[in-house]
Amino acid sequence: MIECKLCKKWFKAITPTHLKIKHNLTIAEYDAPRYTSETIEKLRTKPQWNTGLTSKTDERIRKMSNKLLGRPAWNAGLTTETDEHLKTVGLNRRGKKGQYLACDYCDKKFYRANSQIKSSGGHHKKNNYCSKECKYNASRGFKPWNKDLNKENSDKIKALSIKLSEAHKNNPKYIWSVERKKKWNEKMKPYRDVRQWTEEQRKHMSMISANQRKWHSISKPELKIKGILNLLELKENIDYFHNKGIKLLTDRWKRPDFRLELDKTIIEYDGKYWHPEGNEKDKQRNLEYEKLGYTLYILNEDDELEMRVNEIVCQTKKKRKHIR
Image 1: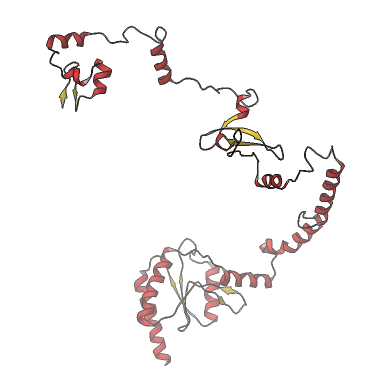
Image 2 (image 1 turned 30 degrees about the vertical axis):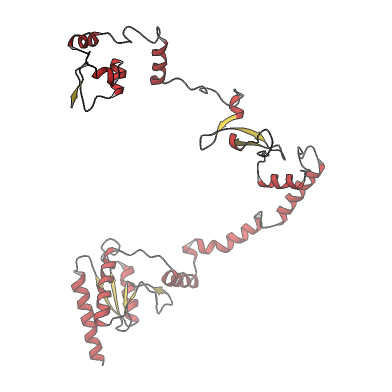
């Protein structure tokens, strides 16, 4: 750290900007031997240039205060309706100045940056077109036949609008007729309300939900059981299906959690929230699995999954040996 001789302040290095702003000196003048202790004291006690000056008395301070405090924007309180300058001049996304022009072909107003506006003439001349279609039509010499024409002005446009409206009415692609809406609602009404389904519709929808449903939420314990069975599949040669549908004797479909087809065993994980004790749906499900000849094992939250799954696999292996 270095101490300044004039202001007695400490700095990492005495820079020319500090000397110029604070003391109005250069580095050569500061390092000159003529600056003794007496001259340094005189310079230190010398008043600053802005002592006793305000923004009202001095223009320099007024400019500095405007920069620091911020002047009001030139377009404050102005709109395109009140000011003509805002109609023609604008800013695009990159911040370049531009203006609104009229298309040379269709007289449509559009915004264009100053760099893209046509020059005075010569090699760099650019025509102003709002789209590629207008540019193509102008290059081929086509003239817009419907320029400055409306339904009120010309009979041709009026006849075309009537023709299009009649075509849309007759064409079912554009307008959904009331009669067709009623027919569609009557056809889809039994499918919208589940209580009005027939037995065939229930069987059909159960088959779709069991087999053709791509997404199915899997709980964390189910994922854990799946990982254990994947390891046992390599060691014990077990084939299992996860969330795959089975056709019941009532011609409906169910989707058990895990099914060992060769051993005729089903593993279900029933949580306490969704499967409380004494649930009639779960009892009916268990009876339907037993009628098909499957042995059912139900796992709960209190069971140790690894130990319980290994026990089930050992029991299935013993059954295989007994059958042989």
